[in-house]
Length: 200
Image (spheres, helix red, strand yellow):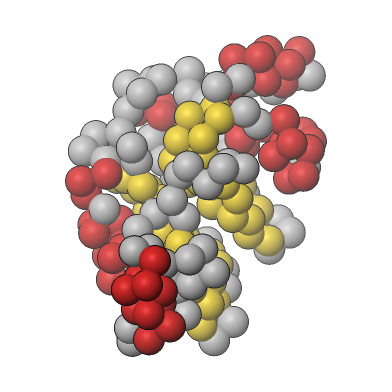
C-alpha cells in the first residue's frame, strides 16, 4: 500500500521535517516495512514502506539519486518498469536496486518530468523534488487509483496519501460546510474539495 508525504516551499527545515515525520507516523498502517524522511533547504519528503519488488534496504524511501540532489516518495506500482529500466540502462543509467521506484529517478533525469509521466503505466502517486532547479512535482496515475491530497498555506505545499496525515502535518482548516453538504446529498465528497477547508 505505502504512503507518501512531504512539503515544498520549506521556510524552516527542522519544523518541516517534524511536520512530515508526524504525517509519516499517521500513516503507519499503510507501510509496516519501514519509514523515512529526508529534507533539503526548501523541501522535505517522507514515506511509509510496504515492500513489494525489492525487500532489501536498497528499496528504502525517500529514494535519492547518487548526488542526493533529486529525491522521490512513491506509492504504487509501475507495471512497465522493467522495460523502462532496460531502456535507461541502455542509455547508461546504473541501478542500485530492483525497485520500480528507482526508474522514476533515472527516468526524470533522462527524460524530464513530462516525458517520464507519459511513459509510465501503472497505479501511482508520486512526490518528486529536484534540488538543483528548486522544483517539486506531484503526480498520480490517470485514473487516480492511488490517493493524493494536498493543502497550500503561506506559499507552502503540503501533501500526503491520507487526509488524517495531512492534518497531522498542519494542512487544512476547519470542516468545509460545502463538502459536508455534498456528502449528505451524494454520499461522497467531490474531487474538487476535501472534507476540510483548503484540502484538495
